[in-house]
Image 1: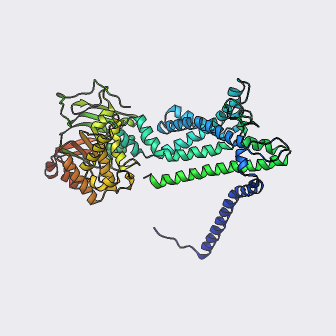
Image 2: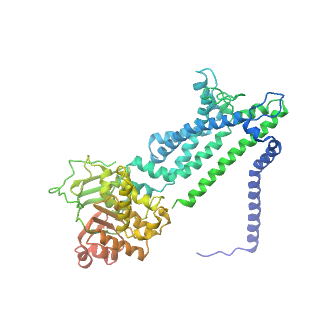
Image 3: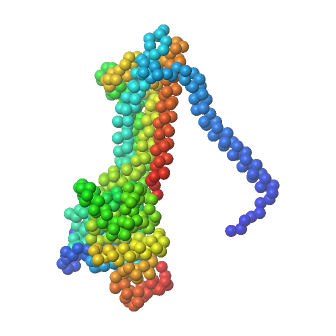
Length: 289
Length: 268
Ligand SMILES: Nc1ncnc2c1ncn2[C@@H]1O[C@H](COP(=O)(O)OP(=O)(O)O)[C@@H](O)[C@H]1O
Ligand SMILES: [Mg+2]
């Protein structure tokens, strides 16, 4: 190959352009994280002072009395996320494994397409769906309906992420297992799924973090509850819903609590993301070829 | 899926129930419209090493993978003719593929241990058959590792990841993993092509030891290796077996011109 000589002028121009473009991209990167930083700063300023032990252990106080906490909403959110996970994870992981292992089956193509459609569906539509099947027939809101709405949101997220992770398992491992006599389904479960597991756990955590803060699907399913309730067939409080109610109230006290709840919710999501990061890291440390 | 045509399967002569005996009769194989194997008739003696040599793309791997029906997993393939292992027609409708693959072990070109512990890798096969007791499993794993001369190198770190081993050790681990199933036939597809000479030599020594117990079929591009390790050699060319004979004869006085061209390096 011959290297063509470049004139000093065009070289200078190229360097200048390079500098400008790098600068612009750096700026874009800062802008992309700016909202998160501003948001966190604001939340800390407004909400941190209201976060104390009582916030986690006490029930909300009636209007006019100051203090109180959001124990019911915190526990409610955990229950809702638990139900969602119990539905979304097994179905999503199973479907993702199927999509990856039967790539070309006609059913797989259909399911993949529908998953993408569901992923793009506004979350309030999931709420309507759960309301129609689980609230309207029984005549009242329930934790179960809220959990199902969130779980339905999780399914396509987990499905597609699992498929991606399973596809990264090298064919050579599948063949090794098959050559040892492992039937296909056992190869899928004990080799393929197992090898992809750290990646799937990461994806599952990201999906949990993603739905934990959803409000719209809860509006007419779990609804919300000012009292302590852990019954699955009764309306249940949740952090996003409590934030929504408190924020639109006219009371300063409730506004402060809403800020604090938002901070706790973001903290929860960040913590889950950090765990997900950690799991991903250990995957590349321990396993892989 | 592979279509078996009982009417076309033409076993010649009696089925002989000799463990480790591999007999291919008029075996043809297609990937979609492309025929990869043509009328392969080959008898592989038990307790011997047979080398499959020939240029790339002439069907050696395809033939090897037909012996444990690993080609079954590739869509749109089909075959005619028959292959018998230990006297059993392996493409007969009643054949249990799981059982067949336990009887016919396989080692691949690129070592592929599972990303699990050294112990677990060897234990994978035995664990498929029910739940062997801890003591039985320990014994099977130790024996397989001893037979691959790995035991002394890894006995203090059986719980460590198999991926912490060197390439040559990983390949020997893959052989141990196959041996733990107590196969009667061991297939190796260019097992040394990515290994350094010392690791290669270790594996060749292993094959020499192992052939007293089982039938070994090895694909190799390294003609010196074929000459060193094998008792018989089959020369594959464009999907056909051009010549099959005792290794010494193939290398000193081949009967077919093309074989001679290949082993003297005139092509391929
Ligand atoms: N999975 C496959 N699908 C389609 N064609 C294949 C496949 N595997 C191998 N072939 C073709 O079959 C022929 C024989 O291949 P192979 O058995 O791998 O040869 P070798 O091992 O001797 O190099 C080649 O022409 C190759 O392109
Ligand atoms: Mg090959």
